[in-house]
Image (cartoon, rainbow, N blue to C red; front, side, top):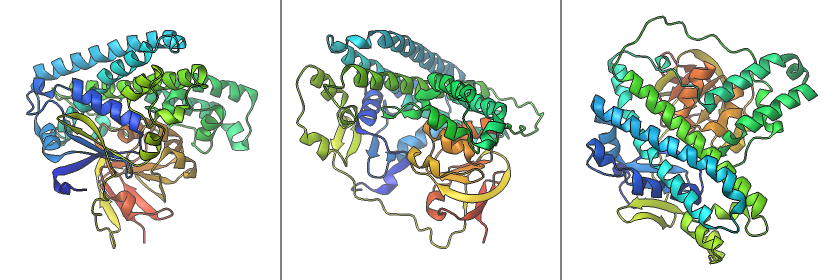
Length: 437
């Protein structure tokens, strides 16, 4: 990386695609407007490195977002704006679902889809304002499990899989798939299958994949951690609202991209191969539907790339040189933030991509950089989660609280300290993960 690594902070890590990242960064550039809430910048400078999956934010801007607590009136304004944006996009997606069959006759449908999706994506930056709450909760003595996840499709899908697993536990033990179970899983996939998408990447879950999630999942939901104390904070309702809206926004965008994918594969399969669209920008795709075809060599050139959000917008650049690695030799333990308490031991399974989820077996400890809903197959079977990146409102934290599984997040180096097969203890009471020697 040409720029000093101290100037940047890795905020997220996941391998994505050019179309997704370009759409999100452009949306942030056009619509984030953080100065309205007293920040010194309207949008954060962001760097996405496709080779590593690292998404870097300027360290000074991250620090500003993590330390500036807004006023009560500002949080109310922020949440009202996010709610309004979400509802507008939800209404648009419903209309898009009805009109997409006309895309060949009316290419303007594509342009409007990207414009509306960029507006929705602006909340990716705004949701980072929740980072300030992590320290606030610690100062007020409020544990992570006090942040109850709202009922979004992520939590509903987990709960539904747990119910199916319990209802069909005898069949799952016998490793048989009855017609009744198959019907149940078809209904599940019709309702929640889109969560297999990560924006434009991936595909909706199939019955086979849903069945694999159930196998070895354990069935009976665990009892919640007993804590009868009532926690009070004027900011707790804002934390819960921001968490719900962020999760719902992500789910809705994945649902909309599943509709987009289905549209291309149903009505445009003779015209363009869906996977090739992932190497183009939204504007290039709009031009493609106007019969202005980009040069095919562009796709090959973009197998490795970097996107940077600058004052000029989102710019495509060459791949970065690898950043200096953090020395981890000789380390046997890492420290992080407790997302859900508990102590458990198990074998490490490093999962850096949803495609590797099948390697996780019942009782394994899932160790990853960060998780998204398409990691759910692995999370169903894992006994605990450990992540390099993420806070108390991250996806891993939400699912850990829903599944009641020990979880330590934000360790920074767990995927580098541990390797597949290591026996480790996850002490999610103290936020320590150590190798059992």
